[in-house]
Amino acid sequence: MFSQREMPSASSMFSAYASMAASMMLLRSMANELIPQPIRGYILNAFHYLVKPRSQSLTLVIEESNGIARNHVYDAAEAYLSTRVSPDNERLKICKSPKEKKLTIRLEKGEKLLDLYDGVSLRWRFICAESDKNAPSENTSISSNVSVRSEKRYFELSFHKKHKQMVLESYLPFVLEKAKEMKDDERVLKMHTLNTSYCYGGVKWDSINLEHPSTFETLAMDSEQKEAIMEDLNRFVKRREFYKRVGRAWKRGYLLYGPPGTGKSSLIAAMANYLKFDIYDLQLANIVRDSDLRKLLLATANRSILVIEDIDCSVDLPERRHVDHHHHHGRKQTDVQGLLNFIDGLWSSCGDERIIIFTTNHKERLDPALLRPGRMDMHIHMSYCSFQAFKILASNYLDISSDHHHHLFPEIEGLIEDTQITPAHVAEELMKSEDADVALQGFVKLLKRKKMEGDVCENDDPDNKAEPATKQSKKRKVACKQKKTVAAAGTQRRTRRLRRGSSL
Image 1 (cartoon, rainbow, N blue to C red):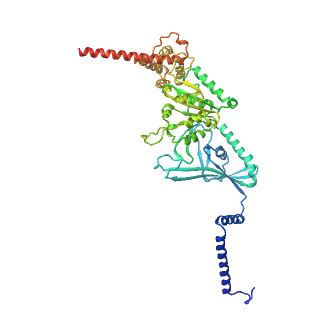
Image 2: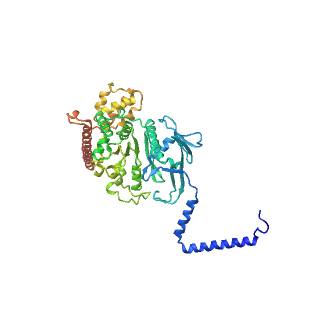
Image 3: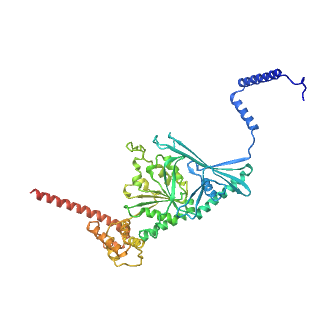
């Protein structure tokens, strides 16, 4: 204890404090005058770094996208963590489609999860940052009055710094492999379509399970044509090393052309079910910029089919730089140069085992740039229904075996080969009754009615039976057009004669 004499007085303590404060202010003023601001900031940061407590934790951020491409680590983490859910989790997203074997579990935003790998604790957290913006940005549509919902999703993986090498070289590859095994075991084909609302990172794909039942067995098409398509698909998927050796991107292009209702969409679904490939349905009319188109194309997964239906209506290559000022959205016409580059340009190498399909009802309207070699490798003509295709439809809808010969088949064969009727029209007629006799009798009446209406095209070539069905169909179309032209001319002549007679 200090004695009364040793205890300083209050006035002396105040004087000492005032002197020290004045000295500090003098030193601060001198430092401000003599030491430049950048150096003062550097010294202050260094001081904070020295006195700040050191963290032994390291956090890896796994974002949903990697630039303009999809981040496969994010997808793998999302699938893998669904198997590591514990009772400690409070909020989870649950869904199940009819074809999936079990529930799909995903973490809700903000949820944390602890995983153990080789005795090491690894902490996961799912973060979803959202904000509403009224002002357009570079990723928004042209309209400035649209409220844009921005969303950024990512995982955070935290662990002790000393385990960094193990996580990067062992744990993350393990997560990727596990996710791949889960995808192969529980593979459900997906149908991807555009998300029309612009979000973080621009446009993106939304998906739904592909439940189209079409197969090559049920497809109403000549057997020779089906076998040729299946052989081409089998050859394509087996030639990975061939494409690599010759220096070409591992992709294949198909053009499906023919009248509406001839089964183009059913063929696409049959190809997807046959190869177990997902389908990406691209509507070019909804694309504003080439950068968005590239992002969408790069976001398509390997082992997938990119479909652009009615390509003749989607693009107009000779005028792709033209701006349509009368369009109600005020958008520039889609520039398909990015699409062409993805098909056979430098961008075509960004992905493996991809199929690109164009469909059109009018092949003659397509720009030659889309049809040149290297873009559309195989042109498939989807023609009117032949008798062989009819028997497949009869088997599908009326359960009549292809080996069974119904007493109406000979009459139907004689009528259908000279009638332009689509498989869709045939199927619609066969669905009108579950009784095979009633349905076939109605179909015969339909064919006879179409013949009376002038839709029948007689073929005068006696040797046409030996030709392929596709050539016969082309000949029938040409003959039909010629006969209709002659008939129209005859009608005009008769009309003129009647008018002259009436005037007399």
